[in-house]
Image (tube, rainbow, N blue to C red; front, side, top):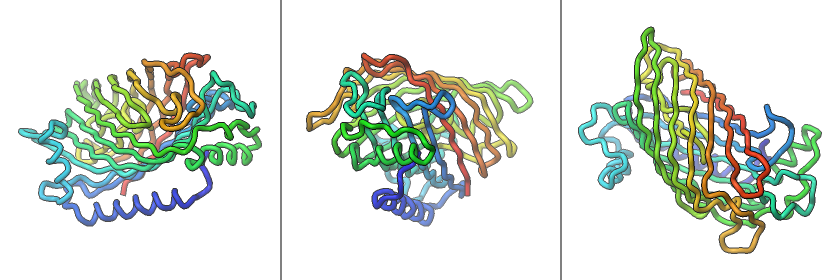
Length: 347
């Protein structure tokens, strides 16, 4: 489901293209390849035709080329290294990249036929955002990821248009309670996470690895700390640290380095889990500065994810994932099950 083009979406797209061109023109780089990914997450593609809770997400991501020492764009990484993140002192191989992204997430209650939604059910909300991130791979064994997202929650996020226009197109009843959605509010999220890789080759080009992670997110949209891990089996595992996801989720980084490929084809099966201790979730707790719909959110939320990633060199990539998410608010009647599909093209 996607909304009709708007001034905001065109502006974000233009800004992303401009920054991408600037990064590409200004950076001396070891790996000239860039990547563009489209991520779609939905609760009804595989598991039924109902919309509820986190019902749909879309994200467009640009991953810039690898930066060489001496590039002017290395400065932010070096500045952060002095504070602890992105420290690469004594490292043998370091890969540093920028990401640019924009996306939309849509949330609804379970019963979308009511014009006056159940006060104990999840509020209607849309979240339209853009952002930039810094990603560093150190010795193919550690990944640091800092990401800043900023956008709008409320009617100006076009959640109603995204859902109901698509429903009208496919002949499905509209969700009727969007007049009661969360109010307009600017939103900001700053996230930092670190992942470690423990790799074991098993012969024939195959390997298994374990990727534990720790992270924190702060802002008026969400505040939480995370811990998790992923197990993978396949070929060319050192090219990335897991498939892209829409935050909050296990992995969630677009990092990929074709310099670390051994042969043109790679794949892996993966399974992983992430737990989050949540202090705030605006989509459940309601608006920050105005009275709005809200529910009592759960302090602990967990995801269990599994799927398959396929990639052909740096040219094409396809990931599919299924996620089981525990209850996020007290009166939620059942966990959420999501299906995700990521498509990436390198150039």
